[in-house]
Amino acid sequence: MPVEPVFETKIDRVTILDEHGRFDEELGAGLIPDEDVVELYKHMTTCRHLDEIAFKLQRSGRMGTYPENRGQEATSLGAAYALRPDDWLVTCYRENAGLFWRGLPMEYVLLHWMGDERGNQIPEGLNVTPLAIPIGTQMLHATGLAWASKYRGEDGIACTFFGDGATSEGDFHEAMNFAANLDIPVVFFCQNNCWAISVPTRIQCSAPTIAQRGLGYGMDCVQVDGNDIFAVVKVVRDAAERARTTNRPTFIEAITYRLGDHTTADDARRYRDEEEVEMWKLRDPLIRLRGWLDARGLWDDSKQAKLLEDADEQINAAVQRANDIEPMPPSEFFAHMYKSMPANLQKQMQTMRTSSLGRNPETADQSATA
Ligand SMILES: Cc1ncc(C[n+]2csc(CCOP(=O)(O)OP(=O)(O)O)c2C)c(N)n1
Ligand SMILES: [Mg+2]
Image (cartoon, rainbow, N blue to C red; front, side, top):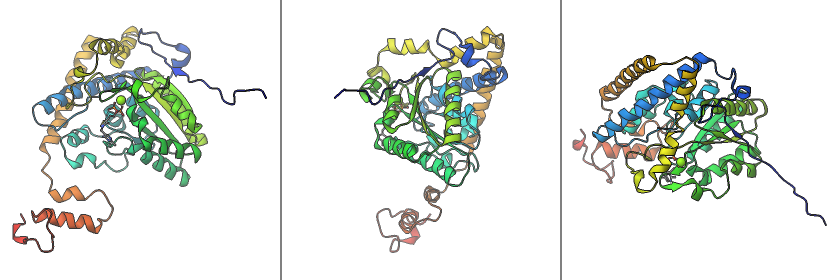
């Protein structure tokens, strides 16, 4: 009896603008109009500056914690640029660039990290979900949103973001299984930033790529240079088109790098080599894009100086709006989870009002109510 392979495959890796500034004209020419590349660069630079300001806010006690996005700006931004405004953007917590491009006001993200629930109350019609801190949950939400779109006969799709670490969660596998087997138009976008807090990707996944995890579900899979915004735009456009026209999901693994600590509560110097960080600094998506713009005479130092001034002003105005917001009544904590509040939450809310946590609200001393 002969032994024959029943399945063979390969995973493609897409790069258009590489770290040495080489640009693949065949794939990249006309992909993004020059004026849009300028806007994308400005946006990435503004997001980078927000990281610096948020870091200082946290260090000066005005923000609880903050996860720097530094180094990963091209991933969610490229995806948000490639998607339609009615497509769902279902993120975790390191996708500022994509969220702001879609139109989420900056102060929402600031409020979230300042511990204010109102940062999670996404303006109606924006088709983004609140930041997801529990690792993996949002992939199932995205699958449900895309399924609803298909069920209603609409052609909107969902694109969900998650880290390399999240691909070890059960939720990831459930979402992938559902999406592939029920033909659900969702794009799974893994930001492989080489680390899940202190766990390197090589420990997270012993296969040569994370992308191939999608093969087990019969999905189209591709790896992309996540620090190359041209390549990200291309693979997300292709995946979105596939989802829209055939309902087939795609799994994208974007190779990028977390240049900062995991969050402001972490110190990555304790577990990773400085040489590794220095090597990835050379692949910085902002430096790469700036080089492309410089080579075409589309950018210069005076434009850069003006951009930094504008960014500073824009971010400080958002910080001001976040700081100026009236304190919210504690009962608001309960208001946004369900359409109508279930009895157990109503009871908890009452308990809190009477300052009698843990006691029966019906019998608690009402005079304690503030
Ligand atoms: C269900 C769950 N388990 C554990 C955590 C604690 N935790 C927060 S971030 C993180 C690592 C996530 O790594 P990755 O998915 O690679 O995302 P990255 O932070 O690198 O963007 C963990 C384990 C959590 N938030 N939720
Ligand atoms: Mg990671």
